Every structure is written in C-alpha cells, then in structure tokens.
Length: 375
Image (tube, rainbow, N blue to C red; front, top):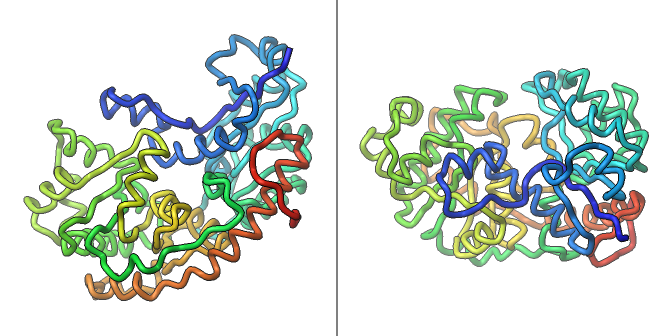
C-alpha cells in the first residue's frame, strides 16, 4: 500500500459559503496562512495527502504515513507553544520536514526567545530531517543559538506557488493606478519597530486608497473590518479611533464597501491579477501580487517582514525611512512608482533553485521543475 504524507500546519483553503467568523477561524485567524498551506499542498500534489484531523492516533500516523510535512509560520516566539505537536510526533518514528519556520521579535538586536515545548519540537525535527526550511538568516541564527544548525534558508513556501523557475513583474501596470490593492492592519502595529509611526503610516495608506476610487482593502486578520463588509453589527470605535485622520463616516463607508477577503489562493490570485499594483504592510498581501507578476511595495515594520523581504529582494521602504508626520498620498505614489523589481526577479531564481534542493535532500516527491541546485 502506498503511504501518504501527513501535512500538519497552515490550512490550504477554507470552506466558502459559511460565516466570515468560521472562515476566519478555519484559516488560523489570518487568511494569509492559506497561501502557506496551499503552496505546500500544490508542491506535493504528486503524493497522497492526509491531514492531522483524519488520524486518530500517532500509531495510525505511523501505519498510514511515510512522512510529516509542517507548513509553518512564525513559530519561534516565547508565547507560542507547539508542545502538542512534539507530544504526537515523539510517539512516531516518521521523518518530519518543516517548511518556512520563522522567528519573531520586536527588536532584531534581541534574539528571539523560543517556548521550551516549541524548542523541543525543533530539536525533534532537526534529528529526523536533513534540514529545516527557515524563512531567513535571522531565523537561522536563532536556531543556531539553540544548537540547531542543519537549516536551509528558503523564505516562505508561498513564494513558489506558481511552480515557475522565473518571475517577471509587469511594470507597465504602474502607468495607471486606478485599480489599487491596499493592505494594513490595526492588529499588527503593536509589534512594529515603531508602533505610533506605523499607525500614522497606515492612516496615510487609507487616505491613499481613498484617493484612488477603485481601490480595495484586502483583509487578512481584521475581523471587525470584515464584519462591516458582510453587514454585521460591529463596534466601530476601535476602527475609527485607529484611523482617526479621516472622518469616521468615510472610514466606515470605505471598509464596508471596499473590503475583500479570500478563502483560497486561486480566488485571491484571480483578484490580484485585475489590479494595477499592491501596497501596504502585510507580507502575504503583497507577495501574492508579486508571484502573479503584479508590482507591489511593502512597508517593512517588524522583524518578520524585514527578514523575508530582505531575503527575497522584495521592494520595500522601512517604516523608519518615511516621515510619518508628513506622509501624503503623493509620497506613497512616488514610492510605489519608483520601485525596481530586478533584485526580486534575480533573487527568486536563486531561491527557487535552493528550494528544489531542499525538497530533494529531504526526500520529498514534489512537482517543481528541477534546476541546478544552489545549496
């Protein structure tokens, strides 16, 4: 009997047609997670895949599966306890591969602390795999400081969703910014390098969106804004208090009429391909534009986004480089129009090759076109 691969981690999609709360909860409370889970499912589609929920016990996993693959996010943080995964996997002998694990801190000068149970999981994976796939060099340093050295710096697996060895950004779209995708979040500014500056910049982003009549706001974990969009009764005070540089009525009207969210990568990609460009502070909201060839600019505001954008050569502006007190729609438009994507296109080719090598050395049967591996 051919054995299956257990994929345990970020989901690949959520069921459409249910309440926005149910979809939000199924996504892991961030629709960006769907891009991570979907990528791993797409890349391993040659295999029979099972989910953790379909297995009753570690013994059943041992019997039915040949490998465990974990599509990961920013696991390495003192408050994130993945002991339940370690407990389950310790009762098996299965090889385990983690893809895209990252560290999170408020300040990159401080090494990310790891919950003891999560560190136990990382050591288990290190023992049962050729290498751990990490988001960037900072995460590699954090793991090395904790005695784990067999890592490959591969970025986020969602980068490779389209299975192409090259990417070309269609900069001709910047000639018209009528259809503009924007992203930002009240929920993440608290762990920004500069929280108050971040708030001012996201207020400027809202004004930038309002200045472009066909702009849309793509929600990832902004559940109150999503509630407005689907017609629920929402306590709007926290929204209007945050976006306090624009009249409250205009703020509510914008999020009610212009918010979008997506239950799978395919519908998200279909939407983004209709847009002129993407701009904002959310990594996955901009990455999905780039992998579809759409220009995007990311405002880097924390260690997580900085690590991945630096590795991938994604066009960025650091939150500290913008005068938040004097940031206008014209400022943001000039930054977007001046983006160069050459470094991203070149970095992608090298990272794609490295990622193929990572999958190969971990013995995973994948469907990426093979290239000369740069390890």
